[in-house]
Image (tube, rainbow, N blue to C red; front, side, top):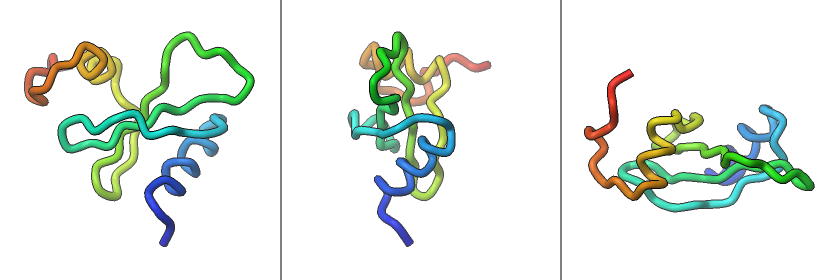
Length: 78
């Protein structure tokens, strides 16, 4: 069993990204920023980790944690 960072890197590289960096803690999630080396990416790609569950942040989540919202259930419903 690998460490969380190894799992997140594997998740990102399987999607064509080259690496990840820890961004911050947001609610129950560890948030990582994913990127491609040598490419200037206009919009950051965030990966959320909650225990063993790894997924991309939705656009609504990305907007909320970039704006500094702290209440998880204030996310708009899709």
